[in-house]
Image (cartoon, rainbow over the protein chains, first blue to last red):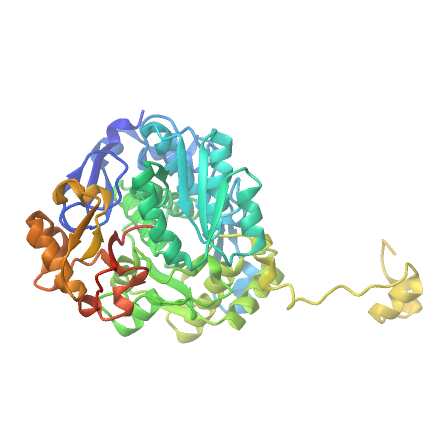
Length: 423
Length: 90
């Protein structure tokens, strides 16, 4: 039903238009292609009240997503919790703080299910039966899981140094997982060659314009769950730099439909210091992104040295009055523990990056303590256990006697007898 | 002569070829020879004189020229020069 809403693809640099096809760059100048919608038709066709009666998945916003007809892959994706994080807010000294928790996205526990649901629905539409991706880990699991459920053959290419949870989390689904000796940028470059040579649908290569739009659903959900408003600040992890732009685009689309007030959200981007090409560009006011040749960080999901959307991301942060900041591995682990201990949310290392950067920005005064702030958590801590396993205390082992337990917790029998129900 | 690989969507501008042999002792010279042979590639690769478009990545064998001497990076007869669209991944 939504086929009439997508006009085609447009080059972000020269404006050349293309039909809806599997192509990620403009053949005139190599510029990125962006999906073009007929917003007037969407505005005439879609009411906020209609949308609010739909199931709580990303597809309740399907008119604003680039598929024709009904989605066929990832029907249950999205609708993740926006948690009012009061204990964390107190710890950080801010008034109004929320966690958008895509660590529990379905089915593969990361925000990547959003982009994959769109990309694979599009792949089916365009007639691909083999799909693939270049991944730092989360995308690998998402493509593998969603392709399995859709009956598509999947090739998943990853750097050879990924966490075991990420590798297993792709191979379990029967995908053909290939580890490349090298970093993500080597993997990505190889995939650019493979996609066109074999005529496969690589979600973040030739299907990328459609794929990237899936991230908007994270922004739509945040605005809706805030009672149809955009937050004052949002902090987003950056790898390729696409998500931050798409969340902002989502807010602007809702503004354009007249569903929310004019957007004044300040966009903040988070990276690890060991791989900070985008935040470095923000801080040095650089006109071009200087790639990082050899990323070194425990936040492997963000370890993209040559981010495709880095330029647009850095521009966006500056234009919205936001900022880009990066943090070291120590701060990442501390923040993962803080989030877990205050809100009961176990984020992956990238979540540690985002929260640690949030904390830094608050201390720097760049995030106003009285404003509303959303922190985007995009992946699950179960997948990056190696990063923290030696940093978290192991449980003590005792014999099954009351005496040993009492001696462990240091309680005397008298205190124990005074304890209320349950003793 | 060095071998230059052409990304699939640009092959119509290179006589349909996947690779083109081009002469030169630096990346800049090799690409100049490439665009001499296939003038339609000139404006697609270069924004101005000696300035590649922002989203064009060039590799000599497996190394990004931005980590070497950009267009002044030396090229040997046996080298492969790859033109790869930057807008992918993430």
